[in-house]
Amino acid sequence: MIKLSNVEKSYDDAVVLKNCSMAMERGEFAFITGPSGAGKSTLLKLLYCSEQVDNGHISVDEWILSKLKKRTVPYFRRNIGVVFQDFKLLFNKTVFENVALSLRIHRMDPREIMERVKLILKEVKLLHKSDVFPQYLSGGEQQRVVIARAMVSQPMLLLADEPTGNLDTDNARTIMRLFREINTKGTTVLIATHNEDLYYGSGRRVFFLNNNHIEKEIVG
Amino acid sequence: MITLKYFLGTAFKSIWLEKWINLLTILSISIGLSILCLFLLITFNVESFMKQWTSSFGLVVYLDDHITYEETLHLEAQFKQDKDVLSVSYTSNVEALDEIKASLGANAVIMDDFKENPLPSIFELELASELLDKNEARQKADSIKQLPGVNDVQYGEKWLASLNTISDTMRLVAVFFASAIFISTIFTTYNTIKIFFYRRKEELKTLKLLGATNSFARLPFLIEGLFVGVVGGSVSSALVFAFSSLATTRIVEFMPSLSVVLSPLPVQVYLIIPAVGASMSLLGSLFAVGKIRY
Ligand SMILES: Nc1ncnc2c1ncn2[C@@H]1O[C@H](COP(=O)(O)OP(=O)(O)OP(=O)(O)O)[C@@H](O)[C@H]1O
Ligand SMILES: [Mg+2]
Image 1 (tube, chains in turn brown, yellow):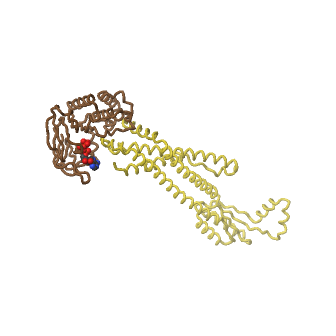
Image 2: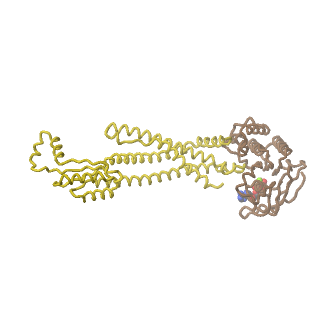
Image 3: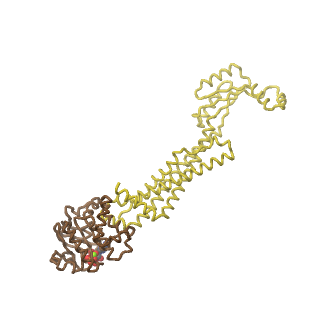
């Protein structure tokens, strides 16, 4: 599903990734961890084409991202759900509209959008805030909206960047359960996190990103 | 169809949210188009006034005092054969004198002081309006002047020349004016939409990260620009119509004789104005959204 080999990425002159290689199977559930500033977000950005590699090969499913044409990027992205570290919610749209947006981009029927969005909002315990604008939500509530938006289209790959950063243990557990559920339905899940509790005892693969590459790989 | 509702919703929400900027844009578009239309209204009226005037464009041929009856008949026959001449009317010097005497009434005796009839006989020719061009009119006059028995030919030479100049100038100014207003309309919408675009740059980036195509992200802006143009055009249509009806009734009140001359703009114009506004501002929005990378 995911394949990186000898990926290089720098911002201006600052090298973030070098000789970075990793691979994930379809339907896998894995974590990526490492110190702050190691390049976890950068690696995820490469995977959803928000950044371009300088060198090396990177592919997701059949899509070779290092050779993807600009014009095809939108169609590739529709297969991926992303929980952004900085949320990227639209503050002029309600919670409902924010979540519905990714389905509208898929040009889905409005009635189906209504059903699906209600269902996912119920799962992240935000149905009662459907018509609220994001600025009136707490950090944890905003995070759950982002998670709902990433999952609602049932993507083939879910990338989550620090998805429990603003959540208490209870909410974090709920979210992890949702991730596992979507994973059993076939979505490949990759979570970037500092939080050892998320992967500790999970039995999943954990990639350690350090010194510009995947330094080691353990089972959590 | 499904997504159209979303696009319209997004566009109109933004129109409402940015109502003051939009209002100002609509206002400046409608003012621009109104000024243009008023100018066209004036040009149109001047031209129709001139057409009315020129339909009776005539030429007066003064005959020699000692012209014979045969020569007069010959001239008349020649004029009637000329396809440029629409009608010929002859007034003999005797008839002319009688007319003057009749108009003088009791004072007609003063005319008796003349031993000879001081008036020439004349032909009045009505010319086809194709000859309105001042050069052709002069050529015609000159050729008639060469004919035997003709003493002089008169037509509104100076008047015709200035008439031509006025109409040419007005057309030129109209074209210049129209281009200037079109460009300013395009530029006004361009600026407005560009401001919106920059204000919502983060939103657009997010849309793209969620897999939206450029056209998906841009369509609401184009709808917004189109709307602003249509409304601006419609407002100016209404203004021009109101002004034109008011002006016509008022002017006719003061100068009833002008009522035949004053003509309102054709009805189609009031549909064309919003269409012009719409296309200009759509063009502006296209330039605005096309230029920005995100
Ligand atoms: N757009 C950018 N321009 C320049 N430098 C950047 C940019 N984005 C990230 N960096 C730098 O690249 C390095 C890796 O950043 P990245 O966000 O990938 O780290 P991270 O592992 O996600 O950290 P954290 O755990 O704190 O989220 C950092 O040193 C950061 O300063
Ligand atoms: Mg990060």
